[in-house]
Image 1 (cartoon, rainbow, N blue to C red):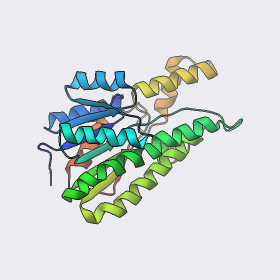
Image 2 (tube, rainbow, N blue to C red):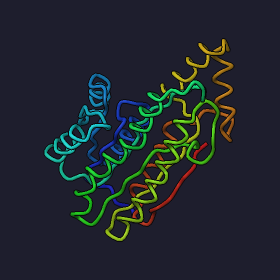
Image 3 (tube, one colour):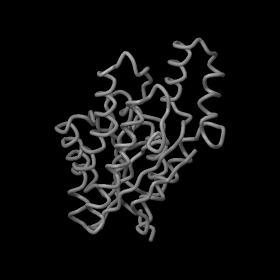
Length: 246
């Protein structure tokens, strides 16, 4: 069953390439969309570009997310759909250990999704319907060098997805995850820049190496992932799924 008309959707990481792509698709289908992002200038620029609501908040801070959810509820209505697209990806060798990077990555990629989900769930449970889609990664399914914190965080996010689905599935709320490979987004651009600085590789060579890690041999377009996210949100027969896009 396909349900869209007037649904209120909250997209975290709304200032990023994938968050914008999801929001644009949802708007095109008639949903009311709010973007949440840590950097006010970025999320407000994205909201202005799309003509939607932007709410600055750090997903690692519950008080800020709770306030953002209250704002969305007051401006647009109860949240029916949540897309957890906020995330960070940083590379580092195992030794010497970078504990700050570890804690920062887990805080955004896992705790942030936990906070956003538990803040939005009361609206969904009150109506007995709704959906959450967590943006994981192929790093949730296998390991990559120099990214222990990122890989661990995405494995944990997949576990959180499955636990949430088990907890709320019988109450009408669906929870799934998408696992994209390397995306053609500003986040990947920053990864390329770090590779260039640390290895001396040419930009084109570094980008080609990342694309070669995807099954398709190319960087994944954000809109391709957004299409799958939106399908998972709309189709009430789809839940507890893990969809890989590479």
